[in-house]
Image (tube, rainbow, N blue to C red; front, side, top):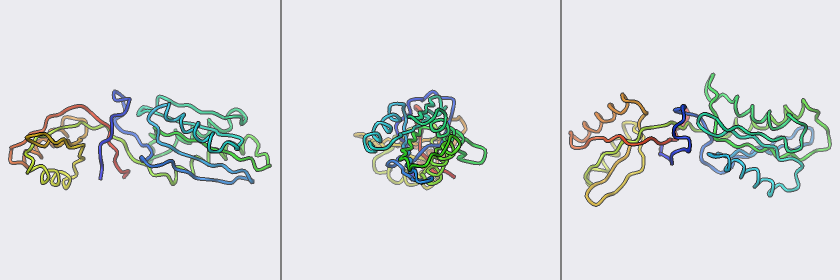
Length: 236
């Protein structure tokens, strides 16, 4: 079931959709390369502060590790991009990790992954990997984690509301869901229930949703367009 979440900070972005991690606990994956352990941790992060919180937490958890390299990309338009080599030779860790995020294809030819913070914790195994080996190891660590991590599409949607009698609200909501409508949070008032639906942010979609509500309620309820919110939807 798809639900509307809180609006993203970048509500005025040019992008109308992008791909991100599902809202689940941190995703972890480990690779071993010539006896060195590379522990990748991915977290959904809607701000730079949230992205940096992951780095700080893992420094405490893996306090005995030699390196805690990181990269993150934030915002529907991917306007915030940061990386850190954390003591590895310059350009061998953070940048390859960031490129693994930025170049990730979420659909054929589509690279729109964002709101993701990645940290690779490295325990040195005693064998030097060289610059090329480090680049490959850090890049592959992030890519392998993304291969398995749950992803969702976030789409900007127009929120529309319809006030209906309490007794009719449940049936109307079920009918709307059955028709594939994405529902937002329902509000219960003293005299009626306000059903909120999320439709693509364009005039044709709003008109179609309005007609659907009119048909399902025999003309007794109409939709009122309101602001926009970001909605999580399954990837195709």
